[in-house]
Length: 592
Image 1: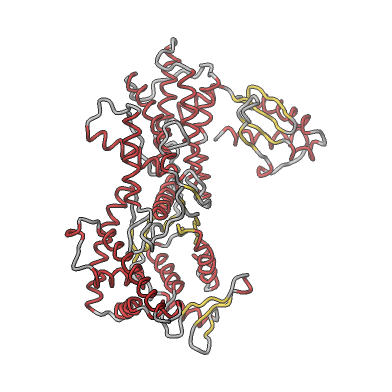
Image 2: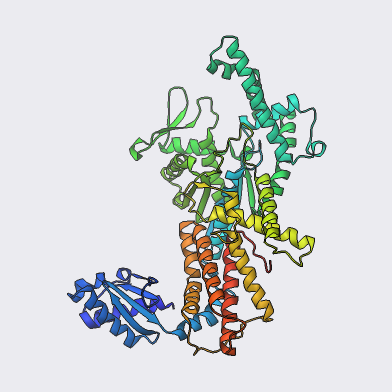
């Protein structure tokens, strides 16, 4: 039982004894004591004044006396207005460190019997992954790891958009202008090669539209009549009809893309238990449309198109099947949602998709609930903001996309330059240097993107992200390496302290209090699907350790008991930093 739980239970008893009243546990607010006051745990006394019929200060003093008398760990208290600040004994905090924080399973919750699916990445097979995908992948992977640490069985899935007019645009451009070019002949990654032809299509399309406008057509007509767009539309019809030549071209180019994606995913450090492909799922929703018509959830218009009226829910009328019987995007999503549930029977299904799709998911989830799907209440859209660079917004059709592979390579290169400038690689082999630069470069990228709440739009500044002194991944990585260096000098292997009667310094106590919060941070991050909780917690822990390192001696402590205790404390900090960063998909070096 945590000290907060113990205090809450005794407050209920105190209210009963002192004021002959009962108070629910939910009415008891316990929080961390503000740094300017004595104590570690603060109780808000305002809710008790209606029972005590006294001022918040008087009420706080009476309850404080009761707690000090009845809880061995409460050694002192002070009351500031309506806040009762409690000082907790050093022996309690030492016990927390030695018998809780230093346990291998600290921060890993037991299995809770619940299964959750996290769908993320969702790339298109007409172009490589870009900076927006990087945020999506990192967010999805980290949320999955956090949920796993909270005891959920997690299934990571990727729904690949491998069909549609945009895919045919790349295929057609390669057919018209590719001269048989392949990843092997060009030396390009497959996804980059296919993306190159998506850009070529757009350039050719614009050229043809401009020519038609010069000939007297309106721009709208030019966009409809340009030969390449008509050819792409015909190719899509041929694909849907199963034309063998078109299917063979589609299969070949997609295989190039998948090989390229796999390299990007490996470097980014993300993985998936299952891939779903829209080419397999786009027809699945039609059965659900029939089911909805039978139930009266959908209605058919005179032209044969099928709709749902959501105006009473504050939304609008939504097309769910075209008049010619072809599916729209939401038709497919209805079917895929059912398929995913049928495959895994999950309690919760999380879609990691940018906030431009907020409305789409409101409609999708509402339709599934109206269809009476019991699992629909477990669907959640983890909406996140776009990523900008200092140079402005990305535009993929114009070929100015911030490519994920190039971005990672640039980050690793910058990490190498910064690390060598600071002279942090003396005695490293070439292989060790390469691994360190990779660790720092990607750690900088991941931390910068994950330290911001998902819903917020963010400006990614590559230079700011690789700063060994800022609110950054490299600062935390360097702190971890610093701790490991201290432990290596002491030949530290495992817990060595056993003295529970030490008198803690302010910084020692602060560090243990901070370490003790880790499970609560993991829990909050899972509840809010926000890796930012962990990123900012680990940063604060690293910052606090550095203050401790500069102000208190570890290896040169005169008392052996103090030295051993501080080594254990340092080890707990390193392990917790490592665990927290791993949940963000970030590796930390043992030396640098």
